[in-house]
Image (cartoon, rainbow, N blue to C red; front, side, top):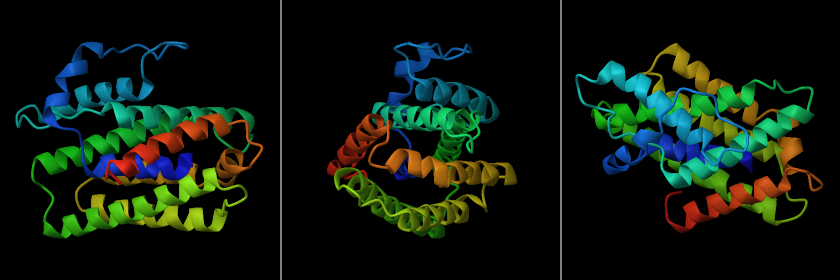
Length: 230
């Protein structure tokens, strides 16, 4: 679920970034230090704010990006996704323990960059069709993830992999004309980890120790579906 979840909200937010007025609320929380264990803060929000700070320095002359921020709902989703990735990587030798942090950072960076493209009106009519394709694929992924969690023994790895690849392709088609090869690599790193067989098995098997966290992600995705965000 983490997998699709991430996609669903990550990429949904990759498509519709936060409202301008939400940014300044957390400006005072920006810090350069590490995310402390047991802290009541949010890793996703911290990364989002630091990434904004760095990116906005490059576009300050246009004023774009000052209003970019990851909202509370997306923050909850990304934080729970990070917990799933981190715990899975610690217990599966086939997973790189450094990747969860990189994946989260890549999600935040891609979200902000696409948001900047939107706010600078650099996305044309053809891009709107691409965004619609991302939304459609994400909704399908989100609903499948909910089913995998709520219905015992319903996990279909082949379907999940196919769905993730559809989402990866849709995102790549959108960003390729506008962003650098490095951004395309970031996108691949995200989907490569989420679609890794060991990660999916550790998250979706019925006796998984990660099931409580997966449940939190499913709760987030259900809220997004109910609110019409997916």
